[in-house]
Structures are given as C-alpha cells and as structure tokens.
Image 1 (cartoon, rainbow, N blue to C red):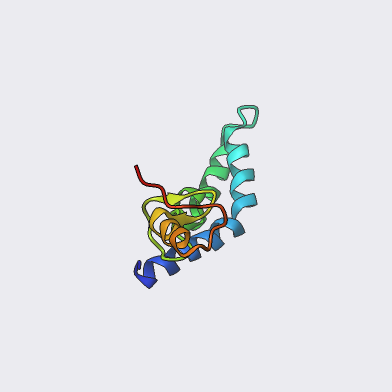
Image 2: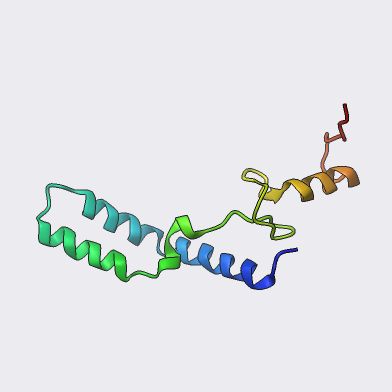
Length: 101
C-alpha cells in the first residue's frame, strides 16, 4: 500500500489538471501561433508560467485505484498487475483464469 500522502498529492494534481486544462491549452495555442506578434506570445508564456505547476497533465502519476501502487499499472483498467492478479484469483474478474506453463 502506498503512502496516503502520495495518493492524496496525486489526486490533487488530477483535480488541478482538470481545472486548468482549457486555460493551458488556449495559452499553448497562442504561444505556438507564429502569426501573432512576439509581445503577445511572450505575455501568453508569462501567463502559462504563472499557473500552478501541478496543473500540468504531465505531473499526474498513473497509480492503482485499489492500492495506490505507482509501478506496473494497466492504463485501461487503472489497477496494478498485483491487484489484477489478486482479483483474478478471487474470481472477481469474469473470464480471467490463472495460467501456468
């Protein structure tokens, strides 16, 4: 089980990234638009840098929804390989059987 503070910090980052998503995208488009003047693009760059760092999508860590584990997480399922195996062994995932060779 991951530290509760790490899980809470990641949840805070997810909320911030959702909150500032539109604002960041419009500022990025303004910065990349070469047709605008240098001053306008520079002002947009300053506004982007004034936003909270944790509002960037890249700072969100993929964590298991069950255990909070940061490594070995399946993106589609949002659970770790260990939690997936445990749920499979308990019979809570339909169609999943233990394989051995």
